[in-house]
Length: 257
Image 1: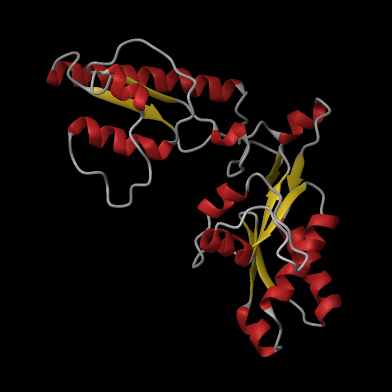
Image 2: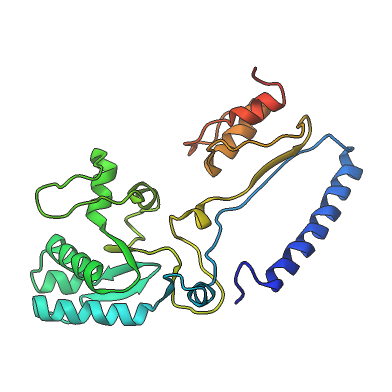
C-alpha cells in the first residue's frame, strides 16, 4: 500500500527497531550478554513506487496482467487460429492451457517463441522475454547468450537469476522481465521480484558473539548465511546447500586467518 520511501515505512522501521531492542534485551538477560551470535538480512528489496518515479520523469509504470493476457491471446488467435491458449498471466509469466495446445496439434516451442517475440516488440515496460525451454537449456547445457540458430537469442545479463528462480512444475511457459521501475498490477505501494539492484541488494549484518565492528563491500549471497552458521557451529551444511561460508565473517571471529 505504501512505497519504500513513505513516512509510513519509516515509522515501521522505527517500530521494528524497538521490537528488536526488546528481543535482544530478553535474550541477553536469559543467556548473558555477548553469548549470542545474530545475523539479520532480508529475502528481497523492492521498487520505488512507479507513480513517484513517473512524477520525477523516470521511465516507470504499471504492467496490468489482464491486459497483457488479453493482448497475448488476441495475438495467438490471429496467428494460430486458436483462442485462449494462455489461461493466465501471473507473477510475470504466461501459463498455457496444455490441453488446448494438444487438442489443436500446436507446437509448444513455436507458440512460445512467437508469443515471446510479440510481447518483446509490442508491450510497454518489457526488457526481456524468456521461454521455459530456454531457461531449461540454460540449466542443462550452461547455454549463455548465443544464437542457437533458430532465431531465439538470450543476451540478457539477468538470465542466470531467472534460471535460478525457474521451477518447471510451478512456473509459466513464457516469462517476462519488466524494465526497471515497472511493477505488475498496481500504481500504489511497491512490488518485488525483479533482478535489479533495488530488489537484489539486501542488507546482511552479523553481530554479537565474537563479532568486532567492521564493514565490507564484498559480493556475498543470501545462500551463504546457512553454511557460514554451520561452519561456526562445526556442523554439516544443510542438504540443499549451494552457498559457501563468508570469509569476512570467519576471519572476524578468528576461525580463519
